[in-house]
Length: 319
Image (cartoon, rainbow, N blue to C red; front, side):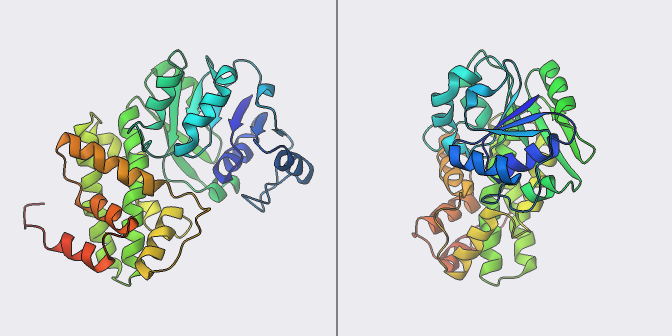
C-alpha cells in the first residue's frame, strides 16, 4: 500500500500511476472533494480527464492510512510545516517522501530538512525531477530522482515507486536534490519573463545557462554534489520548467514579461523560493544576479527592462 497526502494535480497524478501496480490511498483534506472523487473516479477540480484505477481509494480521514505504509507528501512547500503540525502523530515513524519543491521562506529549509526538523525519528526522502502531473497520470514516460540519506530506505522506496512508465533513479544527496528542484523554479520565472517580453529563444537559452550556473554555485556552497545538479533533479527539471507552459512558474514569468496580471490562486513556488535563496546566498557571500533580479521584478522594484540592463551590464568575465 502506498499512501498519498494531498489531492492536488501532482498527488493525483502519482496516485493514478502507482495504482496501476498496487493499492493506493489518496487523502484529500476537503471531505466533499474526497467524496466527489470517489464517486466520479476522477479529480475534475485539479486533474480532469484521467480515470482512477480500481485500486485507488480516496479518503478524507488521514488516520485511515494503514500503519507503517509509506506516505508521499504532495502538498506545496510553504504549506508543508502546517500540514506536518496537524497530522504529525499519524505520519511519525513511517517512511515519508516529500514531493514538493522549494525553500521555506522563514527558515531557508528544504522539504527533507523541514520534515527531519519536525519528525526527527522518521525516515525521509524526496521525490523530484522533470515531470508534469498530466504526463504521469496518462502513463507517459517520466524519470524522477528519489533522494534519501539512508541507502536501504531509498532502495525500498525506489522499488515501490517505480512503474513501467515511471522510472526512479536514486541518490543520497538530499541537499542537491532539494536545491535543484527549488532553484529551477526561480530560473523558470526569469525564462518566462524573457519569452513574455518577446526577447527570443537565444536570450532564453543564455538565461537558462547562466541560471544553471547560479543553481550550481549556491548548491555547492551548501554542500551539494555537482553531479546531482547535473542530473534529473537539477538540469533535467530546469530544461522542462523553462520551456513549457504547463509550468506554473514559467507562466507566471510570462505574465511578468507581458505586464499581465496572474491568478493569485495559482501556487508559484518560485516566488517564495527566490526570496529565501537570496537571503541564504547573502549569508554565504554567493552571487545570484538572476535570482536577485527575479525578486526585484516580483516585488515591483525592477521593471523587466531594468532587470535586463542590470544583468547585461555586469562586468565581463570567463565562463
